[in-house]
Amino acid sequence: MQQYSSLSDQNSQIDVTPKLLRTIEQLRAQLWLESSLNKLQSRLNDCLLSACNTVPQAGAAQAEILQTVVNEINSAVNSSNLVLADCAVGIALFQPQETVATVCYISRSPSPNSQPLFLEVLTAEKKLLLRLQEVIKLEDLQQLENQQPPSAWRLADDSGSVIGWLIIAATPLSSDRESLIQSQAQLRSQLMARSAKYCTTALVQLRHILSWEQRYQQLSNSNQELERTNQLKNQFLANTSHEIRTPLSSIIGFTHLLLAPGYEPTRERQQEYLNIIQSSGKHLLALINDILDLSKIEANQLEVQWEKVDVPVLCSNVLALVKEKAANKGLKLCLELEPDITTLVADPLRLKQMLLNLLFNALKFTSKGSVGLQVVSKGVSVHFTVWDTGSGISQEDQIQLFQPYFQIAKAVADGVEGTGLGLAVTQKLAQIHGGSVKVESEVDRGSRFTLVLPLKQEVGVGGDEEVGEDEGAREAKFSSYPLPFTPSSSVEILLVENDLPNADLMQIYLRKLGYQVTWVKNAAEMWETLTELEPVVILMDVYLADGNGLNLVQQLREHPQYRTIPVIIQTAMAMKGDRETCLAAGVDDYISKPIDLPLLASLVAKYSKAPNSVDEE
Image (cartoon, rainbow, N blue to C red):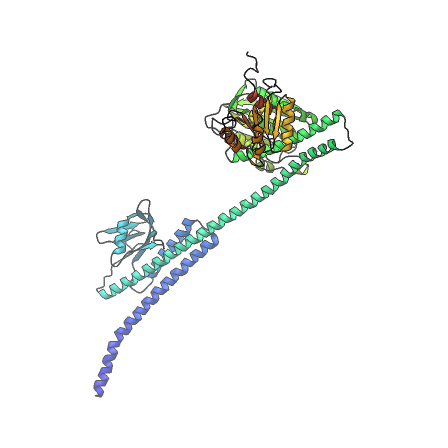
């Protein structure tokens, strides 16, 4: 019994040893697997941390992650004692636009005798030799993925989008131990499958990091732009406040002086004060027009009127407008005009505006010497150069000179008037004309601003060729027109105006011209007056206390007895499209505020004269 028992114990020990060895091998394999994966995870975390700290390019960060995966798997399989040597690892990146993948990362060649850097992979049908940048078809990758054991593992994010494939090639074992071969193949598959999962997770996290970094950068840029915009806004408000308050001070002050009880200035003094008031009012209007012009240009809504411009006449007119200001400062005005330059295709109003902006700037910054305008032709362009002997502009200031609202610090300190809009508007108007503005200047040695414009305009340059007539151009034309006839005192005008000062102004002016004017201040009074009066023309304000003037016009057109009465809208609406909006409502003509009285007279005369009021020529 004792021997039997001893033999039994011996047999028991013999039976247990292989099981224990197998368990140890399994533990070693599992330890190797977890250790390799932990090392891979650690390397991937380093890559992601680096991406957080350095904000790399997306392609470079992805390449680092993929190459790390390839290198770590290759290191794991070639440093183990688990019969996994002679393996090569690669990654094929998916290119959906071509429905193929390209092998972009390979760790090493599968055997010492083969060419470096390629994978030799077997499918059920053929052998694939994959080198760097080698194209591999999707069906081959799918076959490698589906065969047993697999040789390719798909890298797909949570949404199912394929990023690429992790590929491995291993030299077949020469051993006949099928169970060992099978176990090592399974171990290798576990390594690759979990590595593919880690790789995919790292790539998805990288996307989030880069997306967050991009959003952060965009937010930072947006904040900087908002800060800059806020600074410009504050600067603009400060400049505009100064520009508005200065002429307003003159208007209010001299008006108060004229109205002061007991103060009776001479006629000459009255005329002087009124001239100051009118000049200040025009300065305010010019400021508003500059702001509107810049807004229209930036919104691509500025209308231009292409015409053949008489260059010598226009230049003479421009210099005549600045002659008084130059004389007041004791400056000499010069004009140099090449005799061959006669005409130019441009918008005459805008060309005059550009030259006046440059000339007024030159006069503003010149205290002694001369200011001049030189016009020469160069090839297919005309160069209008405004030069001066003034204070000049530093190179630093020249860089920002054409930015909206920018003003030279020294000029602001010296109390020089300006909003910083004139040069910005001039440059944009030049660009609309297909031209440009250049500056040459040195401190204390004067400046030269050159407006370069093409002699001829191509169709579509700077905007539509067929455009509506600019309101300013219409006013410039009408302002010089004489009345086409002497109005009869029987010509009845109905004035529908909400604002008392404007109503008084138009009544006084039109009555002085000989018209009978009836004023009503709202829609209800208009309808009541029309039952007793048959006006020849109706002057209609847009904004009334009890209605909209455009709606009233449409209602008038619905009544047969009022349908043919001409209606002229007077309004402060002066943006692009406002005139067309008014005409579409049924009005006959349009005039913007502040009212140009000669233009008002011409429009009223145009629509109120009877057929026999003018002698036949």
